[in-house]
Image (cartoon, rainbow, N blue to C red):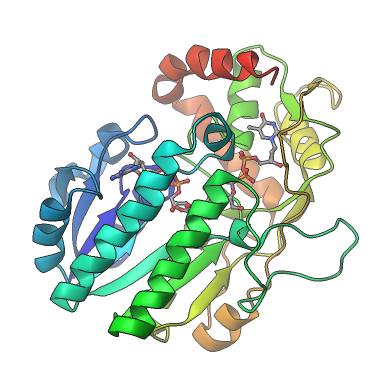
Length: 331
Ligand code: NAD
Ligand code: DAU
């Protein structure tokens, strides 16, 4: 079986490729990645001999057609993924997340190739802090940001191509990932690398917003469960019951890194900041038999902190520019 992994040089994609090569020796991997600021070939350096890497854009219909024609399954991770960037400039989000997904859909339609579309819980909008509800596959779509609205649009395109053209696709909507290789613009690696750089961590507002954290490896084992055992046309929500507010996560990071619990700055809040995400992953557990391996966020954070400590060369060069961009927004 040959798997085409779009966005395979980014955070989740790179971990997916590594997991695939480790656990499925019969699977051949092609990575298609545009190597934007968020992707790097270095992320795949240790496995580069075992895969085919294509530097290209998912909106390039000719290239996508050729690659899809030669594979059995497309796992579509490629996206513009950061909310704060989408608030500064939405245009690449529309192009990659909407036009890119359309381009992939047309190619899998032409060649009868199976697609698994990777998406986010943010398509459902947010929940109140005191609401006992969680997102389920039937929660109405209600995205808040340019990022989440373009992801929502991409999901709707996939659903329409399944129904209208019989495309063999599955979808998954996952909660907040953490782990190795996550870009340092994101909350957890930004704070870890701040501490490692002697910079005080930055908390948006009061830090009461809740995210449902999952280790990236658990996301990826769930993706494989859906590819291998999921029902065509079905949407699976992926989450590991990891709800925490941002202040608690930051305090845990500070404690694990030997800093006082109040060693952080409260900065300008994100515009339209979603309050709370929470995933009901019971379909994934009951129907596909999936269970997360990381059930202790503290242990997962300890491993993640160690990775950033040991991989300074991976993030150091980008740090000043990332912080300068945030500083312009008072964050
Ligand atoms: P990322 O930003 O780290 O990586 C995205 C990758 O896509 C990069 O390698 C980038 O170069 C590539 N890319 C961007 N535009 C491209 C284009 N036009 N053509 C080809 N490649 C392109 O993102 P991530 O955090 O790894 O997220 C991957 C997927 O998972 C996204 O679809 C995202 O919406 C989804 N997701 C992310 C999370 C999370 O917590 N990070 C949670 C749920 C779902
Ligand atoms: O829920 C899934 C989504 O999780 C994915 O679809 C996105 O691709 C991914 O980026 C993530 O989105 P968030 O916006 O939730 O993640 P981020 O890491 O940007 O922020 C997490 C929380 O931390 C959020 O409430 C904002 C807050 N935050 C973020 C940064 C960068 C801070 O308090 N300080 C910061 O410096």
